[in-house]
Image (cartoon, rainbow, N blue to C red; front, top):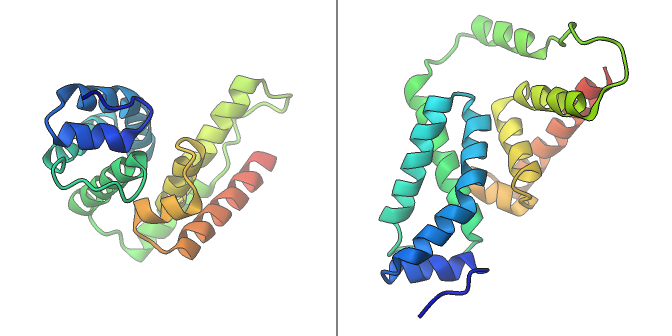
Length: 184
């Protein structure tokens, strides 16, 4: 029995029953969104590719345990986010207070090389991308999940493993920071 193509949960459940075409449909539907999220979050193409493959491996491994408690895309992004956090923990040594302050000062310094003229649409988008890249990791993740994946505050909280109010606060701080940076 073929699963309806508009229902990701149904496709995943069909894949769990052995319908390989259902996995192909899920992969085709979500590969671009997942890869963009990982690439923009990790900011390292090799790491993004590694996490992309591992995320799909986890989906395959969890197929028989999958229960549609949230949207499939939320579940998929939660797996990817957890793998990303794990990779940061493994690969990044803890910075001293001075190193962290120096890094924050470098990230927060505005880009002075932009000409003072009316921005084209491309330039505005590029400036927004840079501003998003300059956000602290947790705020950047929340913004990317909201803007690129159109997740609700509740879904962002679920993906990142924090409370609703924390997710809402991260979004609010990120949006305020983006407004400030883009107003400069």
